[in-house]
Length: 112
Image 1 (spheres, rainbow, N blue to C red):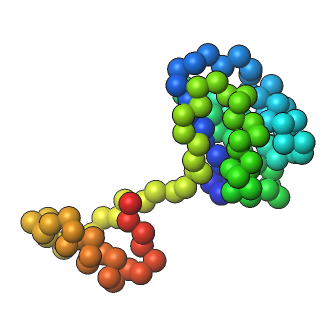
Image 2 (cartoon, one colour):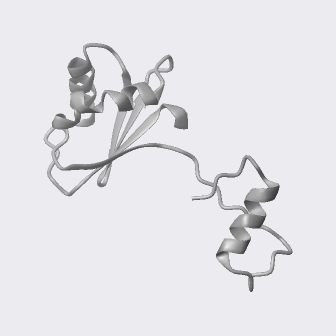
């Protein structure tokens, strides 16, 4: 479901709407049913799109509903992160050398 989740971080401003009210308000602002669920956890708002909607589509329309979230600071797609463990790699090498080794032999690996 990660490809269907949009994470919005906001400062500690008080959120007046409940998750259900925010869900309804976003769908109304978009004039369509894009949002399946909204969850509020701390300073994070997680929006899950309907199964037929890609989150990139919702992200491109964020300007239509961000005014509903006071203090919104960051909007990003929920992308998986991995931390590979490489056995036999000397830690005395520089980080640049390690990056070069990992990316030369693992073309699908994208390091952040």
